[in-house]
Amino acid sequence: STDEKQRLFDPNADEDNELTAVAFSDGWIATGGSDKNVRLWHPDRSPAGRLVGHHHGGGVLAVAFAPGGGHLVAGAFHA
Image (cartoon, rainbow, N blue to C red; front, side):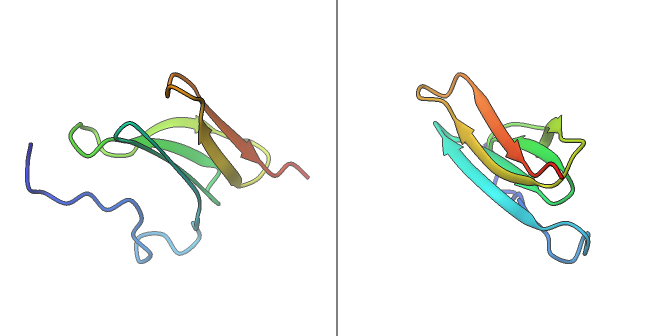
């Protein structure tokens, strides 16, 4: 374990991306954004913010872990 902080979202890093969805399960954090990407995070593991999905339609609107944390689902806007 390290004392380094991991920033889940840096509002100054990419002005075109907004964090739009967050879910938590057993130490894991899933995020989705207007950049159409779903990322999986764990504060004790590397790499931070591993890309686990990309939606070709629109931005990610929802992320959720199934009970028990074995599956992650995401919903996106498709025009």
